[in-house]
Amino acid sequence: MELTKDYAKEIAFHLDGKLDWNEVLQFIEKPKYEEQGDLAFPCFVLAKTLKKSPNSIASDLAEKLDHPLFEKVVADGPYVNCFLNKKYVSKKFIKSILQAGESYGSLDMGNGQNIVVDFSSPNIAKPFSMGHLRSTVIGNSLANIVEKCGYKALRINHLGDWGTQFGKLIVAYKRWGNEDSVRQNTIKELLDLYVKFHVEAETHPILEDDARLWFKKLEDGDKEAYDLWKWFRDESLKEFSKIYELLDVHFDSFQGEAFYNDKMGETMDTIQKLELLTQSDGANVVDLKEFDVPPCLIQKSDGATLYATRDLTAAIYRHNQYNFEKTLYIVGHEQSLHFKQVFLVLEKMGYEWAKGLVHIPFGFILKDGKKMSTRKGKVVLLEEVIKEAMELAQSNIDMKNPDLEKKEEVAKMVGVGAIIFHDLKNERQNNVEFSLEEMLRFEGTTGPYVQYTHARGCSILRKASVDVSSLKISGLDDQYSWPVIKSLMEFPNVVKKSFTQTEPSHIAKYLIGLSQDFNKYYTNVKILSPDEQQESRLALVKTVTFVLKEGLRLLGIKAPDKM
Ligand code: ARG
Image (cartoon, rainbow, N blue to C red; front, side, top):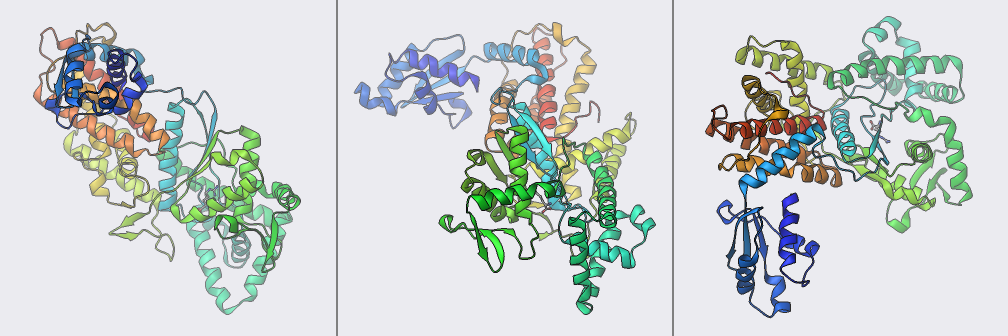
């Protein structure tokens, strides 16, 4: 918090150069118990230089420290504990947050540099999996956080739209497919065709040869093959778009794997010229033994390129295009080896910028402790899951607030918000247990709880019907507002931490904490009661609604004014 710096500076001032304020800052901590104050400085480090015991240094310092920010400063053994001046601090911060509005917490770390966020990236003709949902939700939030920190985010959907499977799909479609059913139910039909291909190929291996042939045709630009592939891609994208629309997630580019087809030759040439290519079982690989990593497969024996070749080419293309500072790849941890290999090959190719490529892995979504799978026909249709969440939210609203205006719109915000929050509230590397009932609860650590707290704040402000910009803020000094104010002051740090650790869960957890503090405040303090602190209390409510709304926005969640 900003005030920690002020405290450090005051301490440094009285140390006559023994430590500068930046050094002091490193040592400042939060006291264990609230009764011990807001900030503590342990004096052990000074014992040697000052040739005095930490306890006596602490009492000397405590006596000298004097500033309107501090209500009192006391020595507690070897610690100098500071109690901030609630009234002074709250007045100062509430004012500054109100002034900043939604831009409160914005940082200028990025100086407008580009960060590519490669996320979502489903495979066409295949269902949008739970893993892709996680990538979508985490990636979208990280892109928002990146922007909040002053970077420009480039949201790229690296569609899985190329590979030998399209040869199989074309063969299957030509044999057993039906245009209308594909149009009506694209993913299900294409998946069925794909499954049928594999079943039939067991007894008729000739189908595999056919598939290879058609993929070759596709690679060579054969019109029939290309048109079919393009149609599968367009129809699949149409279906994915429904999910993106529900989640309100947008992309700057859908350049997926196929986009790099005509660009891979150059990558291969460069690798060859650098003499990095070696043969292994007839395939071309880049050896990575020196890093204790298995070789990266670049080209199969039949000349076909691979997933890794396309990622190498994409990274190079994007660097030329965007001159990015970083690229974040939001992909499950089962692809850790793949990204390690791709990054190492780029490093071996001499690209300095490869240091800016980061794989951001995440865990699985589980149902009753087991991985939710889209394979073997057990397709969990994501669109339906999202719609179910919206319906459940709607029935919750019907129960709690049947007269609410725009009920459907709010139900969408709550249902979708619940799914997103549930995903983002835990560290991304952990697995997530999927439970609609759990995520839609209005109490506990859920999205609806935070949304509800926000709506509550809005409703107080509506009741008061004041012009917030003209409020007279004198400051607050009661015990319930103080945790709220301290939490509000933390917000910029939380944003920064979420960025440096690429971890949206810090924001989600923070919003829960702020909501809890605010709900305690709201239950214990009468906000609308005409005394000289009423305007300050209303201003506090306003700042809480700002921060809750902005925090939710960073997660990709809407905050309705009424619920
Ligand atoms: N389509 C891939 C999959 O579903 C994910 C792609 C991730 N992004 C990337 N640049 N490799 O497994």
